[in-house]
Length: 449
Image (cartoon, rainbow, N blue to C red; front, side):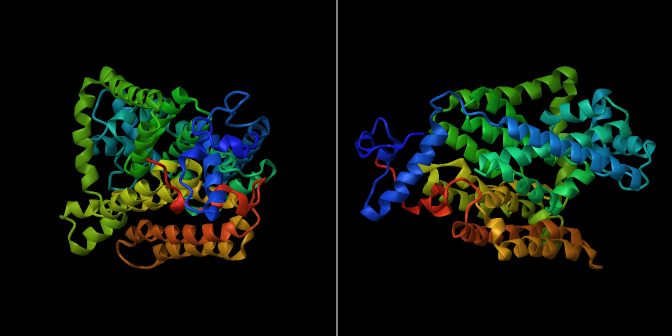
């Protein structure tokens, strides 16, 4: 995009930098940089919509997918695939296809035992009724075949996410292997794929939404939001930010398509099985009995019967979001403000497991794209934080699994410190780190009323 001349910056109708108040000459460089970044993400490209993934990125994704499939096939020869948590998805899908209650613990246990589940405790399904189409599609295949297909699909979607996020956050194309390395060395991601979780699908949906919003493909972006609602409690702050941003930017086409897609999923489940209207009540009961995340740790300390403690982490998360949104809403840039928002949303989620933090990968890919991987201290912290979270699992302490999602909040201070280090390091993008808009904090950004 061509550089704006001083005469152009004086025209409020042509240059978004005219919306910013410059209180001193020292503020001018950072304000202009922020305005140009906002203009690049909100205005169409002169030659048409920006392509989300280039040809070279597609080739890289294919290579990653093939390598992942080869690795997975080799792993299947050595180790038997675990039943959890995929067996719950498949069993619930079988019940849904048979017009039965997919949240019935007794019915799910019967199907799980028929597939070789030896644990006397049932592995229930907790996905909301509007996402029942996913277990239904999976259950169309035999269990072991569906499990291999699901794992392969998870690896393929993860390759797309790695490449897409690297491009979105401005990384060099020839260094896309760094994003793949971030994925492969993040323990929650490997756990999610191994257990057969839906997290890779949600991560791919989030990546698609970001790329499509940047290229102003509002209809497709609205369709892509469907995957974000599979576990809405994980991305609750992100979803609120998307709603507020779309209203502020008057992206009503995007909002209408997203709402219509969600209603279509609901309607499809009701058409297939009218009893699905009552499934939400059936799903909430078993879900409330589960203690996980920081709220689950509080229930363990003060009493499992106090279900309201499960939602207590949402209060500081909501308070932080109010302050953060009021501070940055008038010059909101997804590439700059999403990483920290995503970490806070996950850490303050009422229901969170350790593997759910795989959704935080966009925050860490953003760090890598800014060049944080060049710092030995950041690399040491990357592995050190993971050891601090994983090692307690091997201690002979009851309910130790509740500590893993709670300790995952350590990623927030890690990201804050690593992002400060990334500003002073050579960037992974084509522009020097100190001259990039991300290097300037938006605390001085104000909009003329």
